[in-house]
Length: 168
Image 1 (cartoon, rainbow, N blue to C red):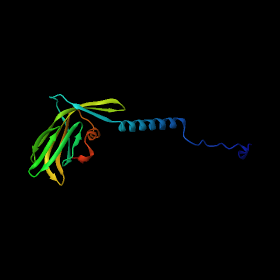
Image 2: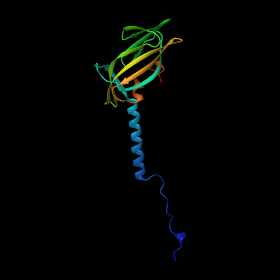
Image 3: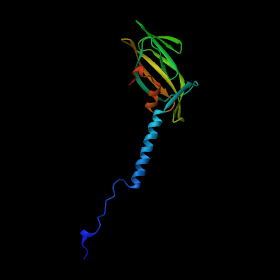
C-alpha cells in the first residue's frame, strides 16, 4: 500500500488560463479603440443645399453671452441685448428679434468622422426662438433639425460650451 504522504505534492496553477488572457486582451483592445474613436470624433461643417428635409429634431435651452461671438459649426452668431428685444447677427446678417420670435439659420451639412473614417453625413438646420434676457445673456430655445438621426453626443460637438446648452 502506498503512503500518500510520500507522493510529491501537486501545485495548483496560479493565474489565468490562456483563453481568459486572450479574451481580456481582446476586450482591452476594444476599449482602447473605442476611447480613441471618441477622442478623435470630428464634425466637419459645410454649407448645405436647399430643399433638404429635416425629420429629426433635438431641442435645447441655450444662453448666448451679450456682445460675445459664438460659433456653432461654422456659423458665427453675435447677440446684442436691447431693452425691447435682441439684435442678432448670423454670419454678418442682422435681424432684430422680439420675445417669442424665431431666427432660422441656413442649413448646413456635417460629416462625422472617427479615427479619420467618415461615419455619418447629415444636413442640419438650427432655429433659435428668443425667450428674453437674463443678466448678460440672451436666452433661446434652440432646435437642431437633422436629415438623419444622429446621437446627441455628435450634436453636442457642434454646440460651444459657453452656450450652456441644456436639453429641453
